Structure formats: structure tokens, C-alpha cells
Image 1 (cartoon, rainbow, N blue to C red):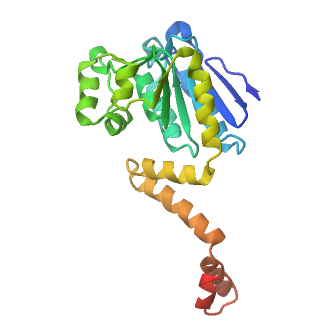
Image 2: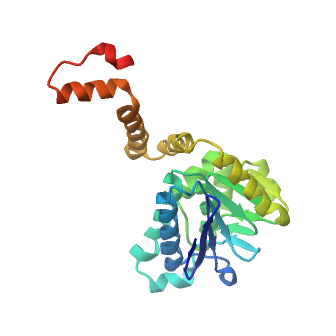
Image 3: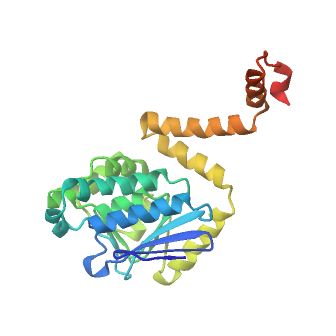
Length: 261
């Protein structure tokens, strides 16, 4: 099934939703329109039960994404230009399905944060990773720091953010920033292999695992998400909940023997 957008390419096939930022001449930088289209595609993949895995990539083979398009900022009010970035990160983080970043080329600034937020990163050996915020009058003191620290450790995360060094794909692999490095020709086959493995896993179990990882940074909202899923399982599947509800509706005391049937 094809969806028509201006800044991204989005299609779903074989239980995989593929989202490609399609601004190669601009380094696949995201502008307000890009972010709104990414939101729309992510929300569509969330509610489509046929989708089991989401893959995010960049078009052109030179850039995955090099962050936000500064030229677009004067044209957009903050609530259209900045907050959608947080919305996209939040959607990826809380999507009840695995998200793979297929990185080929430069992942810089917000593009580096984008792949960090994904559950897995498969990179080509020509990819480069970098944070440049403090060099350009910008920073991401939230998703871009906390989650990066989880992946590479506090010292290395501070090095990346404060010094703005470039890291090769192999260096990224060594520090735990990516999962695997392949040649450009092997990127799509490797992503497909990962997708097929994930599709064969239990989707509810994967969601529970992902929610557990997310909950640590999400406070009461994250814990409530995990608890809500536990509640649904308890309410729908347990004999205890069924007996309690039936007893309540029949205005009688519950029979504890029925709790364990």
C-alpha cells in the first residue's frame, strides 16, 4: 500500500512499514513538513495490525539525516517547527512495535538522535555519526542525551555532545551506538533478515519488553503503560478477574476457588 507525501516515502509490504526521509539534496534534513509527515506515517504504522516492524531510512545513499533544516525555522512558529521533533521521537519511543534505523551515510545532529531513539540501528561501513549542537548554537538536552548515555555511557555521550567528534561506523559499533555494520550492498538484505526474525517473535511480548525499557525514562506515564497492559491481560484472561466481575454483577461474594481455574 502506497501513501503519497512530499518529504518522505512510505510504503507497507510483507508486514514491514518502511519510512524514508526523501530530501537527499538537503542532507535529508527534517523541516516542519517532514516531521508532520513522519508523525502521520508512524501513527498509521501504529494502528495497522498488519505492520509488525517499522524501518526508518534516508534516501540517496549519502545521508541518513543531518538534523533539522535551519532554513525552515524562520518560516515556522516554534509550535510547528520544534515540538513536532519531540512528537516524532516520542512516537518512535512508544511505538508498540520494533523500529529499525537503516543508516547509510551521515547521521548527524537530530539525525543521530533519530537513530538513537530507534530500537535497533543497522549501519553501512561508510556511515558517520556525530553531534554538532554546541558548535552550531543548538542542543538536545533530553532524548538526545539520556538515551545516548544509555547506549554509550556517560563519559562517551558527553564526549560526543561537547566535542562534536566524528565517529566511523566501526567506532560506533565498538561503543554500542549501532547493532551491526554491513556494506552498502548488504544493508537492505540485512534489514530484511532482522525484520523477518522480529516478525517471528511474539508481538505482545516485544511490546511489553519495549515498554519496560521505555518506562524508565517516562515516569508515571511509562509505568502506567506497562501497568495498563498488565491490567488488560489480567482482566481479559485471568479466572480471578472473571470470577470477581461475575460475582459483582450477581451481587454475591466471590468464590475464591474460582480464582485459580
